[in-house]
Image 1 (cartoon, rainbow, N blue to C red):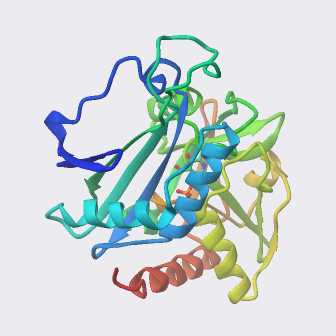
Image 2: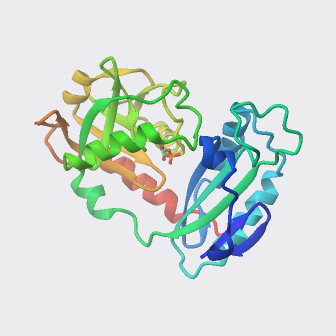
Length: 288
Ligand code: PLP
């Protein structure tokens, strides 16, 4: 495995980072995960723009040219001996003696790390059969629009879900569904799609954006408005979206020990239509 360290490509075993890196000490940084198929990144520009915006939101100066970063990431992808996978990229605020205050540090330089992970297939079985999600409290902070390295809230809820035998945690704040631990959540009711508005309570997912574009093209009605736990349980269909976990039907929801099936308890028609359009887009991505 090769690693992009700032602007150098190095072997994983020589890719050392300083333990005083603020990413390590404070989770003071941001990240992205971008899928590639047949050695072509999917929605690369949208991810890099979000990476830049995440940096700006936490006042990390983003001085790289997006085109240069793009070509570095393509170069990195081309060093690996597989055609399908994803790249993980993180940017931390930099290295300094541990101190919450960073503003007096003149030599603070953001640190970028990126590496690829092999992922041969989309999760085809789950895309068809669907998943069980576990409903729990959204214990995260109030700036979920930032793709922050601080993932403790997501780590805790996802492990809670996993311990109950569920694949994803669906989160709510005072009865309003926000998103999943690492996914956005949609429901379908009477052929209308509902998903939480892209505000500070959710990450504005790139897959969410693509699904909204698909819905528009397919002339499906979409409402970016909050919906409740009851509306989730009474939906005709529900699904989650994310770059790596794809578009997965949620066929049942666990609340405490009780399981509620969603709609007919199997993948819905509209979910399948959206998955099929998404597959078409992936099949059509231009080669880099
Ligand atoms: N919401 C959260 C909290 C996430 O961590 C992620 C991705 O990891 C998503 C949504 C989906 O985002 P995307 O579609 O850009 O991968």
